[in-house]
Amino acid sequence: MSSESPSAPPATEPVSSLYDTRLPELSRWRRMQIPVIAAAVISVIRVLGPTLRFEELGMHHYRESRARGVPVVSAFWHRCIISATWYWRNRGVVVMNTTNFDGQWTRRVIEHFGFSTAQGSSTRGGLRGLAVMARRMAEGVDSSFTIDGPRGPRYVAKPGPVMLARKTGRPIYVFHIGVEKAHTLEKTWDLMAIPHPFSRAVIVSAPLIPVSPDADAEELERKHAEMQAALERVRDVAESWFGLSEPEREQLRKEWNA
Image 1 (cartoon, rainbow, N blue to C red):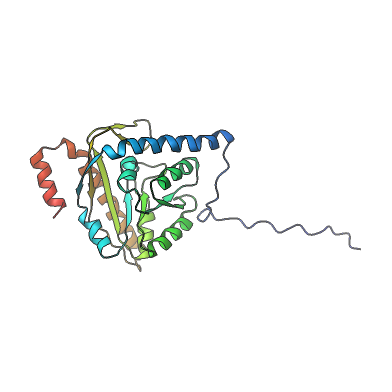
Image 2: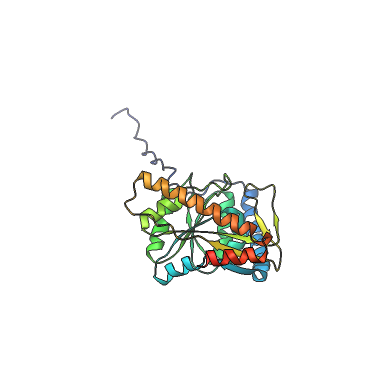
């Protein structure tokens, strides 16, 4: 009889961080917090959302694409996530969502408002998340990224939308929502804006950004720069909108709605 010990079972193959969408281990306390935080945020949005009065600038870019049956890859800054969740509710948009603690309660919130989720982020599970989003877009569904999330840096766009646009052949659509009266969470990385009840809001949408399916690295870099510039422009207009005079706003309406 051989003196060799039985062979050990083969080790589990390591999972690349680009495809790893396993939930991280959380303490019992953190797990208990997830439904509580989600319920609180859902309540805030359900109370505030119906009271907001939206004006749209440049929305024809999005609507014309959808009228042609072409879904879009949308991107927006994390700052306006509360008002954006309400505005885009119940449209089946698939959203890139992280698997960390914040992502787990956020997932409950956005799925409550009729979004679907693809698990992943720029640091973990991103490629798997993009694959899920591409499949959903092939079914005619829009996709969306809070493009400086999940943890910043604030107002620095990550490359996900450009990568997905190249993969799917669908255009990038960027927008920002400005609110006349809102409370800014000054201690949060994103300076999140929580609208006051019955506030006016404006959603500013830029022209669509096409990305060729055979785009090389140089073109992808140009498209990323174009997206960053568009995100900054819609943010600047939306955030300054309610400080402008009515003649100034009317001039911008003509420009953006042309």
